[in-house]
Image 1: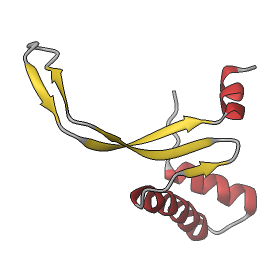
Image 2 (image 1 turned 90 degrees about the horizontal axis):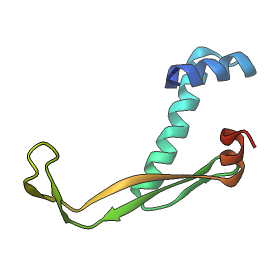
Image 3 (image 1 turned 30 degrees about the vertical axis):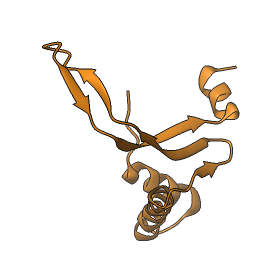
Image 4 (image 1 turned 135 degrees about the horizontal axis):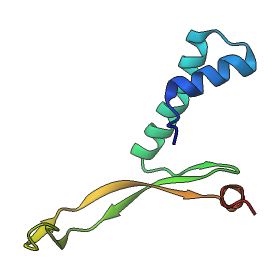
Length: 95
């Protein structure tokens, strides 16, 4: 299984559009910075045909240590969530 990195994305931009290496890296960084900043600001990020990123607030709750079974408090936190679009789900499932 391959992992797609920022470098892979930048190289793809460079190869497809003839950008310089520096410009393609900057573009990838700008895109991820914009997504991250929007999420930090509490905004949803919708990418048509791909999916939606948003931040969810999770309440504190009681969980268990899987090794010992001893109850433990899981603190409240904010987590990033991704929901794929219907189009993307169809592509991934091969339908």
